[in-house]
Length: 170
Length: 291
Image (cartoon, rainbow over all chains, first blue to last red; front, top):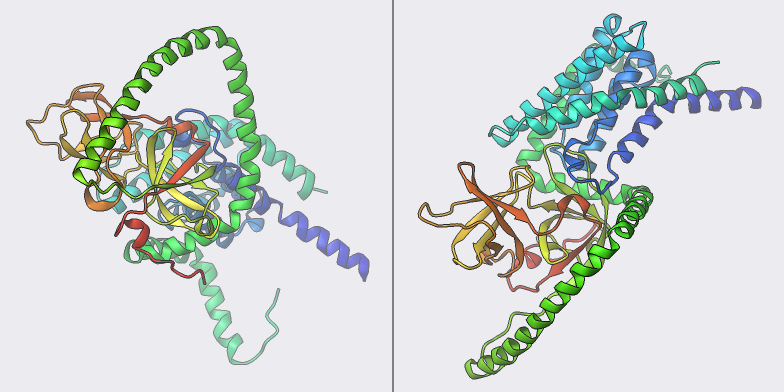
């Protein structure tokens, strides 16, 4: 009985890994790095995490959890409530419905898929912010943020793959 | 996990759950949009929720921000060592210049005091400062806010000005129990009534998410010269007059741009200033209880 309990606890702990990694990245993304002009184009770390886990383990990062993560990000970052929640939920949904396209054999293809997603997310956020502030906000900052996010994706994808192998296989 | 309850709850819950699963995406999108509406309709509610959540995460953010600050300091000290000779020369020259200014300031202060005593001038109430560390600079593309480690229990009130060095960088927009959020002057929602220091021309400093906020409502015939200092005007009672904000950086087709005095990307500590203004923003919300 105790064995099964421990096994179950172990399993639950392992299954929490995708969520925990995403929360950690969310908090890391808030750290003031003292680099000039960094905060404007700080990479969207949660977006990377949601993309990766939605492709590989959608069962462990449910839409509700994604929504909660976006909401937490909104609350902590000072963005209008619902902005990141909407973005992350849309990304999650897009990846899930087009999973056959995104579940690529090579890393390069996964990266191409991420390029589409990250640009789409930038445009969506920009549209929402324009609508909320009822004025045309410059698009250059979100565009460069998307580029930086895209450029840093391999580093974080490597981390996700390590976590994936360490906790969720075997 | 199957629900173990029976009867009407199951009969009601099962179809609801199926519906929810099928339309979870639409439901969540609707929830997001609804939250945006709530934020527009009832900002106070959202602010309260935000400051509570920020309070809850403040210790974690504080712990995370320390290694980053240390690393930045180490890198900075290496750069400083490289430039130590030039820096020394520069500081000596500056010191000589400042000594002269000090003499001038002392003379003016004495003169000012004697003139005030003649006029029975009532001086502004003394300001008190609260120093706080920046623990989060969220990488939000569209918004410029900071989270600092001082809150209601330290005497922070909504509307207080935030200073770094000698320049104003923003104002407090949300206050939690031990953390608060500062809206930078470069944020698209930031508006500060200012005055050009030498021409005494009034204007409004409006952020637009770029590094240099611009002056709006400047009279068309007003002449702003590059290098002129921009200070708060004190209109509207939000801030006392005369806090330096920046210098005019460019005058052109795209309007008058102001370069903030403080380096907004490298803020480590802020001074939150309570000027004790009667009827000022410090007293707009008199000690709302923390429930």
